[in-house]
Amino acid sequence: MASDLAGATSSCPGASAKRGPPLKRHFLSTLDWSLDELDDLLARALRIKRGESTPDFRGKVMALLFFNASMRTRVSFEAGLARFGGHALYVQPSRDTYVFEHREGVVMDGPTQEHVKEAAPVLARYVHAVGIRKSDLVTPAATTAEVSGTWKELRADDFMRTYARHSPAPVINLESNYEHPCQELADRMTLREKLGETRGKKYVLTWTWHPKSLPLATPHSQLLSASGLGMNVVHLRPEGYDLDPDVVATAKKRAEATGGSLEITDDIDAAYAGAHAVCAKSYGSIKSWGHFEKERKDKEPLRPRWIVDSDKMGRTDDAIFMHCLPIRRNVKATDAVLDGERSVVVDQAENRMWAQVALLERLFQEFQEMERERRMP
Image (cartoon, rainbow, N blue to C red; front, top):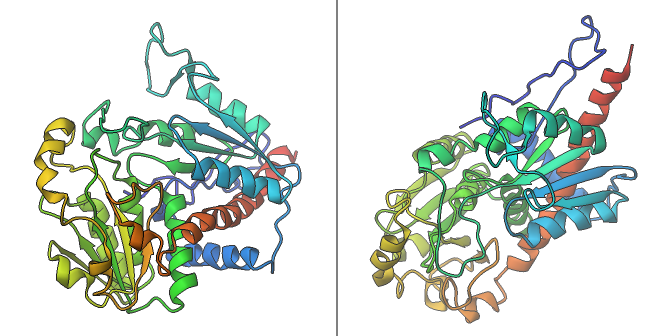
């Protein structure tokens, strides 16, 4: 589901026809970026974390539009900007703003009050980047889930992509229905940092039981993350919990292109055997999409076996344990695993900040070049 925005250009007022329009780059999906570009971001993030490079964000402002709850994503962006002289503005759409509309040709005589065709370019005059989190299944509810459309409809991430089309400033996906690319960057960084050479090493992405039907964006991005590092990726899940087929096909191509492989299985013992990294993630079934109460009852028998515990980790090759957080202890993974020496969940969360700082440094540079072109006579 690669974006049509990759490497896109945008006509800006005052841009010379001879020079051509300046580059406009968003970060809606890692599929819009080449693996070499992602590797460059990874190397940049590691240098920044080690103190070998210091970004200069003085005078830079980012707007963070959160339609959903957040802790790590919000704080990691705010902290990353503040550490290097920048500033973030936290905005809750519909609470702090008018209600946005993004559809074409709509007669706005209902609840929506401002179209992104105006909102996006206006915000771009105030800030240097915009982050958007908009995912139907990211909710604070303990056990229930509701969605506003079918999976086919929501996987398109229409609001975010429409906003990006109308935004002169770079737009960063802070989690959508389909992907969580910032988590993918952090996971790539963590795997490289902890394992060194990743090619040929075994990575297990395992489904775990959870009382709610959680979003698919993060497991999609986690599958793409390891597959782009030349790893032998195993997606361990019970029957009926396959990820989106387009993501799986892309992950398979990535893995094969980088010298790795992709296997999908429900064999728990075989999956854990010899693994170098185990990443746990709960998510809802696409087959049961919209029927979440029935899914909750149907998956109850899976609960005893689909948890990461010491016995399973003991079958690995001293694997690190990863999770994007937050995690329900003794539901998705046991205390012994989370508190063990091979748990890297806190380092993984920290790497959100460093990876995003590297991303912002690059996007700010490109936006500055675009603005310079826009103002030239």
